[in-house]
Image (tube, rainbow, N blue to C red; front, side, top):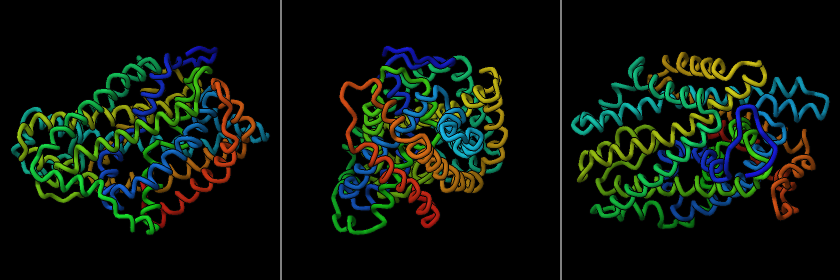
Length: 442
């Protein structure tokens, strides 16, 4: 890339590096333990129609808006909201409102780190063989209790701390360039292997045989919208900071669509690797922690070379989770650097301390579940609404359009602004409402 936009934390060195980092943020546990279940539960291939529609829509005008305001303001969450509201003489209001999406990022990071601690615990159990001989439910429950997994939980948080303390954008880019390709390779290997398991065909039928009647059900469209919205990490915070590290020579709408495409590929790979194996062994195709920490270990115990593929699986999940956690941390760290004038190391250490200090008391499954429900049903969707309204209405489409046109060879679609203002923004509000009605849609 070329241009003169450089944040004090550095900038992404290439278009590919930027996209991979964004994909790393977007690809997470929702792709692995929720998407395959919803794909099968809400119509198989038929579910893909509304899902792909919403992924394209949110990627096109949603991600582009967050990347755009980050690059335009030259800073992350707090500074970006101040920039939007300063144009209306309300800079202080923007600063106050920015803390909602920022706390959404920190809140997700706290819960996510607990879950990744469980993943690392399962990975260690796979490497040592302990998980392969234990009762999976008992193995998981031993870690998912109060103060049940402090060692591996701490290791996860400290790993992210070290990456961000010494790497900043270069560290994010380098780590993402290694971890994300490996994620795809490992999941592809799993998908190919399970294809040869007797009975795998039932899993493919669950995933892909269309039930067109589902398209007439409201729930299918609601869940497709929720899955698409949350899988792209549109939080009004995290993607803004990556935009702040983006060179002026980058085509933002093009990068946004690429991010959505690669995220969808990851979700499909997860489905192909997981559901055929689950059905091959006649297990419950559930969702959430039980799928990843109980059902799949049961599969690995029974399948040929199961220990090796258990290691592959948990390494892949850990990679996806770490790259997402890096983004959550970075959103908070950059804002504290810019807003409070903190040094990089001080901001990283404070964020690390808060994440671990709060999370260490949430290692019980029920407790972290309640925490994540509150953050994902209340805080994050409201933060996303604030981000959408701040960019498309407070800052205004003309200024956003000028920024999004920078780095592009072709002019933006004439529909872009109208879709952003009159379709995307109302849909973000609808996500908040439906989240309360359904008690979570993402």
